[in-house]
Amino acid sequence: MPGSHSYRFSLQLSSNEMARYYQGTARDISVRADNGQQLRFAARHLRPFLTTSGIQGHFLLTTDKNNQFHSITKLS
Image (cartoon, rainbow, N blue to C red; front, side, top):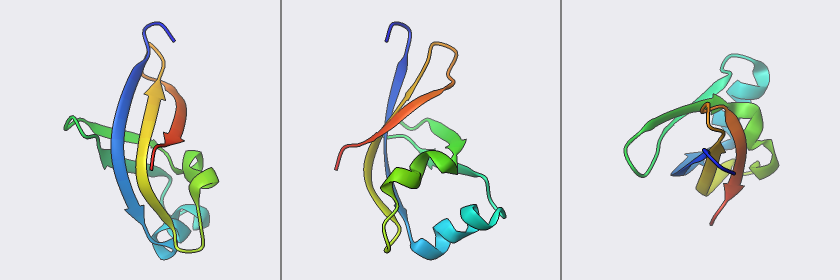
């Protein structure tokens, strides 16, 4: 996508930590990208990656030219 930006990051959240997002006590996820940038996005975007043990892995976040969320892909 022209003008888009991509950010790689690792994430490890237990199922208990993810419960805060489903209970509404937390809404956004804040992570540090591999390049050092701080990222913040809605936790709901991680639902496809949730397992009984939580969420673990390395991900690729893509934004549009205005830095608005476009997609998240699990890399490993």
